[in-house]
Image 1 (cartoon, rainbow, N blue to C red):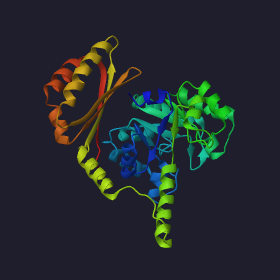
Image 2: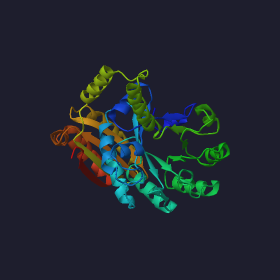
Image 3: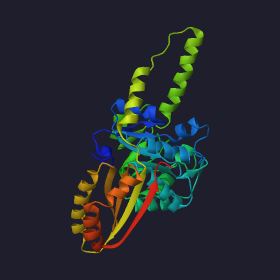
Image 4: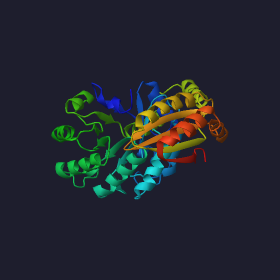
Length: 350
């Protein structure tokens, strides 16, 4: 089941939000099929307020650290850390995750819907297989907090290619139902007081994110534990130290961290699409069998195929380019069927 398909189940997808590797591992152990990140948790744990673009590097580092999780990962990237759609899309490509959240506010002020729509469109152009969840901050910031402007913004982001719409702070059942009935993509909310996940599902909501709640609850639990020790009260329950050690050790040793990421873009000559797809299926199977290849996936967009590849080292990538399936399938059979081919190589660990 794909990350997008998780939004189509009988109940809304509950997406818990982690802020570091231990919190993500604890949530995975609880059986959640996907994990989000919380921009507030990431920024706050670095000593920064949320929404100020200070967590760009920390967020990227966390996304890389979570790549070996056995579940889907969606990253909260605030406003994309730039007003330039191309810069935002380039940043998103480096994340190499299943989904993102991107919001239409900067420094607690709404931006024009045209700006976020442009970012969404460029992200989808460069990463067509990514689940882009566009966040409408009208109710969260209490700016233009009315149904009409909220729906107008949401519709603009959907037209730009958004796969989902997130409206934090929206709690009115009538509004949630209207959003779900009007928009052709899954609607995402935070937990709503007085409404269970099942009740939100009956209104049409397809995803419920915990947001920064787990992070804030963890801070509260830390204070309560310290207070209990100081005041001679019953010490609260906590996760077992040895179990956490084993989780972290197992995760560290579970899979190599990719050193190199490759993004190849194929513009296929008209009439050759089916043949290229057949050859790519062969290439995918062969490349994934290479010891140094950690990931290989093909995503189809409008007239374009994007290949996302990850390798354990530069040496592994060099060896890939010497294989028969690269020289024969790619250079010998696929390239002649293309109008153009570009390849971008990124150092993941730098």
